[in-house]
Length: 90
Image 1: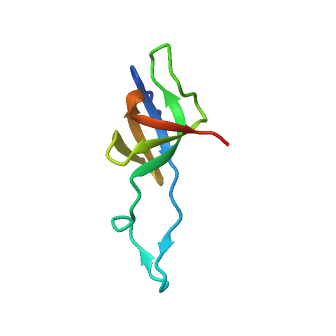
Image 2: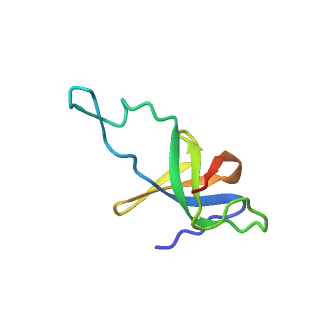
């Protein structure tokens, strides 16, 4: 199945954060972690002509932004371009 975003939307694959452990060695579940942003890699961009991001960029979006899509083992998000907070540059 191929997903093609429309308009000013971006399809990105979530980059899973490494599991966090407490000082005592207890693995903390996702709902306890204090992440306020999601890192993702851009897989496809919508049909509009101008985008700040391009396929392959790593982006940061808010945790409540967009719609989460799961395709097999992959977790993806579909977000509006305006929900992108930053592009990660190496």
